[in-house]
Length: 131
Image (cartoon, rainbow, N blue to C red):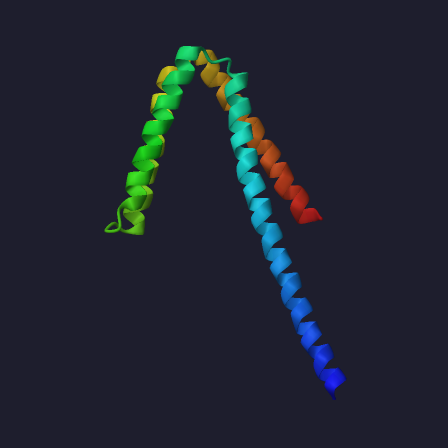
């Protein structure tokens, strides 16, 4: 009887440990994907051959938008719909400001790189579902 109880207890502990390990690996994978996104953005900016002035303008815009997003997140008295609308407005504002800094060649290159990235992302998703 004691052996059966000890074995069942061990089985429960092993099951719990295995599920905890699975959760950690998915969290790690999500962190890696976020890091990859930052790396992709950096690579895109390098591919655009930005001048020092353009880099400084884009950095200032990024910091300004980050402050606006943080202020928006800090608001507790707005609905989810309002939050989404304001986030969409901020995204549109960011795009228009970025487009104002870039030359027409850089805009075309950026759109090309975005399409390429979306294609690769779609291919990765297709590979995941077929495995």
